[in-house]
Image 1 (cartoon, rainbow, N blue to C red):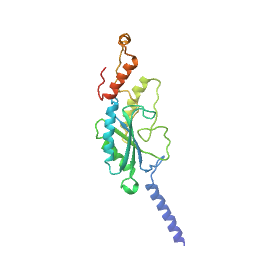
Image 2 (image 1 turned 90 degrees about the horizontal axis):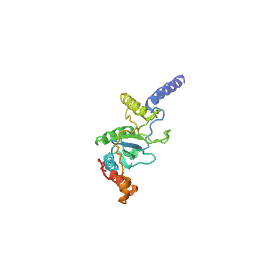
Image 3 (image 1 turned 90 degrees about the vertical axis):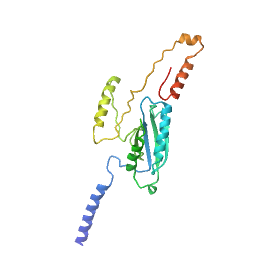
Image 4 (image 1 turned 180 degrees about the vertical axis):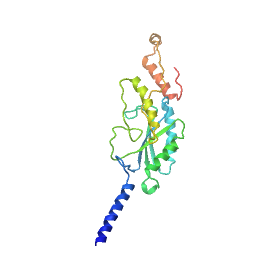
Length: 220
């Protein structure tokens, strides 16, 4: 009887040690529910037409993966997507009984495949049933950097970003800071436009149309 009790105690100890090693650990363990969300990042001077073309290439590249069932992409500015050079996508994976890899293996493979497209960076993370994020981000962890002026933020953010990228323990380091876009200032001769019967709204619409339809250069 003593040997039986001792055997149960030793088996329990060994099983506990094995479970400690095998069970995922972290603040929230990674959940594989077959859903991924991602952010596509392009150069800040990218136009809407250019982003629409790139998102089509990205969708085709992702759908070619054997573990992917479907992809939904969105390009444009809205409440959750504040910049035109960013696009969002949602990926639905095949059920676990129809794929061999888990989600932690699929994510790096998809990122590597999409990053072959010039000028594109893809950030992916799994959609979890339990989360504490208040907004959609590129990566699993995020924090906010504040400064008393735009100049200070513009000076210190690149230094912090480069220091984080140099850390070997971190991957997919990114920032929402957008200060490299193209800027064009237009001076309108209102008197001449008024004599010609051209309203400011007509000028705004013409410039906006050129910006939407031209992929690289905006002519005034």
